[in-house]
Length: 594
Image 1 (cartoon, rainbow, N blue to C red):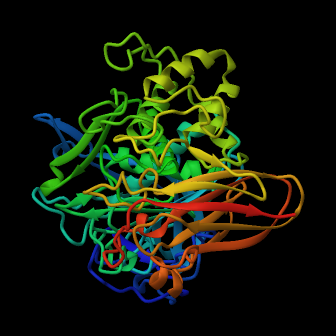
Image 2: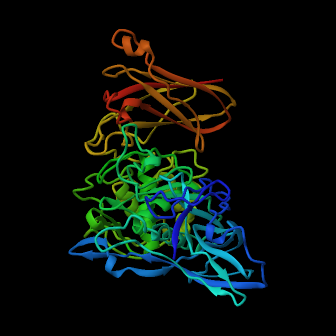
Image 3: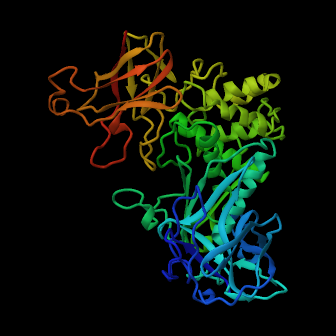
């Protein structure tokens, strides 16, 4: 008998049955940096143990049901009829005696394990939904249930008496699919399927970067995780997470609501989100997040992060088709070819603000297919860089003073692969961008569709003790995905400091249609200061008659170097119905100092 359970932070808690996932589900530790929790106390392996005998060995394999996808009538869906048993690679296996861990190891690439412990004892063999490897390369990844106190999933054997000759104890996590639905108590395979996908992603990266130590990653998955949000926004504890997503700080959330959207077997989705984690872990991610849809013209930081993740999923799979199954019986899907030309009806405005343009560009820089871009044009994909130069360019994002986007990435890639510069440039231009010559996109002349005269540069420049006029626009707000993360709502100003000292950053609204709410965020290789307070009463009440009252400012001690300042009208960056966008707002931006 195998039981899926979740460990709690308490030492040797009693077993209990919440019933949402399995009969043995229990809450687990949320902190995975250690991942060395006490086990649940099982009555069958109780405290009245026989006298221990000589050491004996327990061997076995840990496997799980892997549900593949299949194309049926042009639609990708989960193919339950082709479910196969797959090895759980690199997961922790333990022997528990009287509720305590007495031996521990990890499975090999065949899911096999071997552990030695004194015989003549009642024991439980446990497989934990975690992968831990110390050293270089190294990693710590665990799958928890965010609707059960972020408990770590485990798969247990029944309690048995270990004889002197040892024992074979296999563990298998079943999918729980009954033929028409998942049974409530047996979706045990999900956490191990998630780990299997992440294992492949890590192996892909360390094939070219063997010395990496990956930051701890927690994957939050539950059968209760649904694409809905509460009135106050996404709520992890109830499973109302909105969508599968990576959250900066090494947390990945995955949907699990059957007949709506389940992602535990969607390798494209998991790998793409893990690719976003990779950007955050070894590069830098300055992006804001929010809902988006195909064809959205996005803030350049988000377009880069999500575009890189999607391209990375295709690299790991060795297949450019991205698949996300969903719907009744998980028999519908969203799918597309990452390598296809992005100038389509669903994506009418390719460029540095388009996730589809970014993933197509990055994948074509990686792969060896010499296809024409756009389809049928004279521009050829003659680049096959592989992953190492792309990873080098990714790590260069750690040190750029510019915002993270395709511009510093490509500029670094040109330096990492100097012999391919001309071909890299050809691919860049094929995606609706101008040749990239620096981290700031200073030569860019494409600024979205429809064009607006208030957005004519990627960055504006301001001199210390000087000023610039910058406009936050809502021209690219989406009717389906709102305004939070769209092109032009957040504007960027660059400046250089020559003398250390205290500097004051200020934005004053000059042409809003109503009361404005300017906000500022200062960056030098990541965020270092912000002013994001609500508009003053004077601004709210007196804008029409009193000039210069809608102002946001803050002061910071700065050292010599290059800086960027993010400037935006807050109502252009929120979908809160209480505060509708007031439209395009222009600001006088000043930097004053010594």
